[in-house]
Length: 280
Image (cartoon, rainbow, N blue to C red; front, side, top):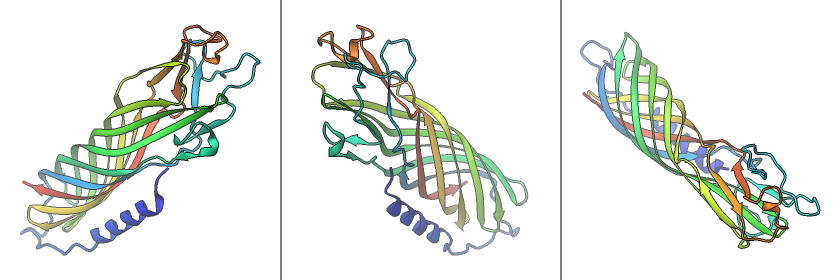
């Protein structure tokens, strides 16, 4: 869940600024001359799509298949109070959930372009940090909450870039492979059971988007860029175990416990940036 009005206001303001760049003096041949290597950076804001329907899935017999119902000894659903797409504020749904956290996004990048007579094609690699958090919570009848949170920080991508040069302005689309270091954590108000975590922090996926770049000096350009990133983050597990009485719902089917997993297998976010480039 993202702070929509603030994010879109910032993106709109940046886009308006990008179209107001002053024209630079043309190159001697009258073209922008986009061929060659470049380095630069970007700074902006990252925000997440809505995921209010996400839940936590259970594997009560530890066979690797999720979607089981955690039942009490009477056969009732132990998680009948439900779920929320955010961080639980207390032990019951009535207390509500905090929304997902959006934040700053920055990166440095290096690339190479070839100007093919108005069509510009190239490749760019970036590395940076994105500060977004995505949580989901479950509530049990005990009552208790169980919150799973993923946090993005370090991330990178290598992307193709293709665009059209109109004088000193380049309009482009981009897309390619993305990687991120996802920090997963678990929190609960349940003190009767023990909980262990497992999972790989490295997540892979894709990043795509587009933007505009305007040359304001022979070797210097500024621009605006939008990117969408989606990483597969589906291997974080939480296992609920004893010590607890044999009537504990987490060990009714298997004495080894019950595994938790998020129903949402991907970590997704949008980002809007201003960028600067120095061309050699």
